[in-house]
Image 1 (tube, helix red, strand yellow):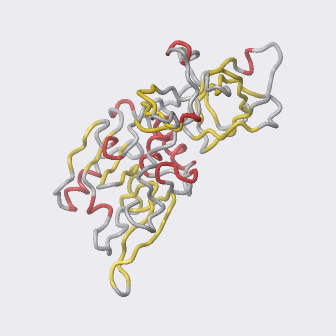
Image 2 (image 1 turned 30 degrees about the horizontal axis):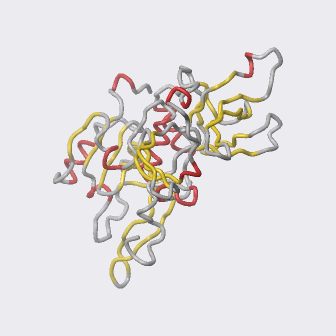
Image 3 (image 1 turned 135 degrees about the horizontal axis):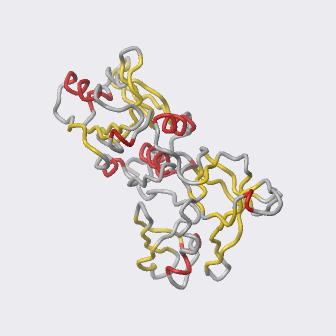
Length: 305
């Protein structure tokens, strides 16, 4: 931690990894309590007790060939270990995908659940697959969502007021995880940190060193809900203009503002909608003033109204 009291930002915590994500292990620590692993979006140490070890990739990737996975489109959705929904397995967060064993309407008898394949860990650490059950009325989708402005808005606002959590500490989301979970529902795998996310898609012009007027001109050309706004250490989803003011939705810890006896810190700690004038009276300037990059995710022709 950077300071003795800065426990909201633990540099040892990089990210949570959803249950069922396929990872590759480079090596184990000497005591074998930790494994250094590569996930699809980040690399780091994982507790060995949280891994189920397969004999080879073929064994671990059973079910990966399904073209249309079951996609979690709700903020969080409960997965059950039994078809009566009495044994809670875990909560899956937005963007998580699972191979399906069958759809409810593919069985002789209509059943009120989707059956998914869940990797599990045996007592000796070996990989085994079990069944998981998700109610048909849950906020899920068979296959990835169509990439439209309407769907982007619906998905983003499902996370509104979700608590901020650095690296998913305490079950929250930081700014880049908010972006990652959102785009995962469309089958777009984003990097885990904001610095790399700001290299995705199509640049609408570097804003570093530009005047406020020049930045506004660039923003006016952006497609709402399909555009990322980057500043040092933070990333946001552009929403468009409201009463002539540019707005964004983002997960933010706080902002420096003007206090009675100097700069003061205002904690926000959740996903919020703000205009880009936020922080204009603080020592670092407004969000608009600090913007350095603007990126369109998907060509214009792919973003349907």
